[in-house]
Image (tube, rainbow, N blue to C red; front, side, top):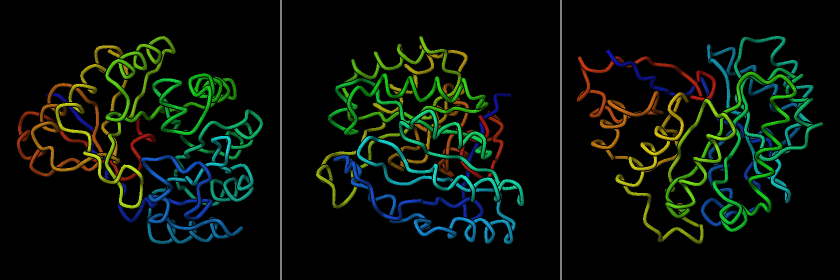
Length: 278
């Protein structure tokens, strides 16, 4: 029987922003709005307190994220002492969004004990510049990943967004990843957010998400591929199809999709970020 991982972050695995609601890049599809729903750890010492509360309530870990600076870096390195203390005194798992960080900062984060690193894959330089506000984005991605590998990080997980780039750019991006020997990929899909320049745009439709996931499987046949948390909801037929035939995991799958696969697909449940279990 085919097995698929189901990821449910839940209250025991909250998202934490080291910049609070602030992000300097202000990408047109995001504007930093998701940061407002995260726990605010922008004041020194707050991250330690948040982690203590998670551990005390029986939680499993946290997503460590935040807004980017003008160069596309999430300023995590100033929190390395707190991260080290958290890893030394608790069993919490930490997945970190690092942006396109400098090697010296990545070295400190690896040494601090980060369990997994999630890195945005920009698909193309054009898309990176126009939608992610980062120039020379493919090389910035590559240098970040290569630095993490050289530093001994065991879990590096690219995340890529479907629905805003052209199909040609998405195919070219998948070929790029194949050439880099990628063995993990999280797919997210554009969902318009109120208060952004793209709030009136249509979300990525079901057919496009299925199409991209299937193309990812073709180009990365041995990789673990997951449908991530940031995506439009209600695509039951698409989720059912992908869980049956294509992806290795899905974050918060539709209950109706799971029910449709009873007796056909074994669902393995995990509490926490998908990146930690790939």
